[in-house]
Length: 147
Image (cartoon, rainbow, N blue to C red; front, side):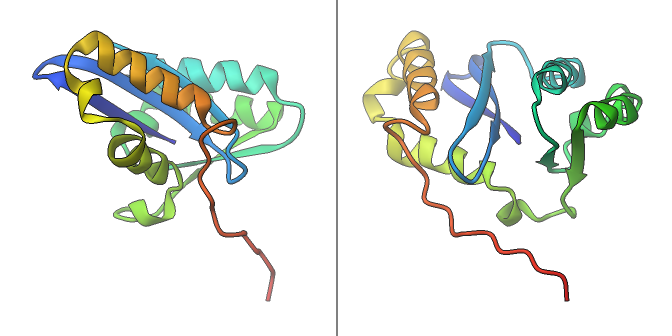
C-alpha cells in the first residue's frame, strides 16, 4: 500500500491510496485532500468489514501508517481477519505497490494527461480502474517455504 501524489501544477493534484495484490486485484481511492491517518483508518475499517478470508496488508513505514489511530485498531481488525505487516525501513523494493506507481507515472500516463488538473485526475482514475482488466503488472510468483 502506498500513497502517491500526481501533480498537474504545484499545489494541485490528486492523491492516491491503493492496495494491490500480486494477481492485480486492486482497491483504490483517490482524493484531492492529503492522505491522512484518518483517511487510511477509514480505508482499513471499510476493508475489514468486507473480508471473506484472512488478509495481510503490507505497509511501508509512513507516519500515517503507524499513527495512534491505526495502532489502536489493529487488534479489532485482526479479529475481523485483517493483519498489517510493516516492511523494514528503507525497503521500497519490497513493496509491490511501488511498481504500480512507477508504471502509472512512466508507462500508463501520457504527457498530454498532465495538461490540466482535470485531465490528470481523469487519466489517473481511468488507469487505476483498469488495473487487473486491461492493464496488468506481471509479478514473479511468490514462493514461501519454511526451512
